[in-house]
Image (cartoon, rainbow, N blue to C red):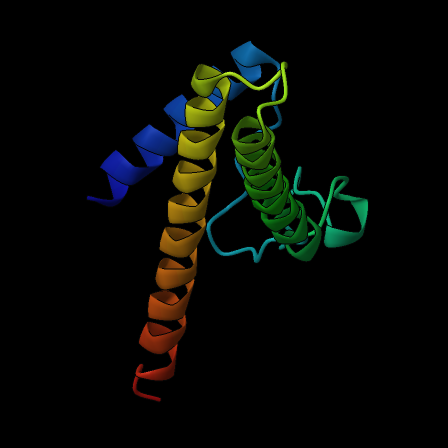
Length: 120
């Protein structure tokens, strides 16, 4: 068995040498660097935070509902730019956005409850 392990290690070393990589270190040596390479630390991550993303999504839903309400009011008052098709489309868009927001809230609450119910 010792002979087969030595044979496999020598084959690996020869393949690595052919590929231009360094030889395999003996199994008895501890790795000198345990850090995972290639990961980005949290300080280097760019983009909006979760709070900003959630705030923007809620603001978008609010804007859709206000637009829908304004179009409905304009249609009721008989303003020339507000036709029934625009009012109905805006109304459906705001309803879908609101339902999606409620679903996200429900899933966040469920995830929170799952975490809180985990045994320690």
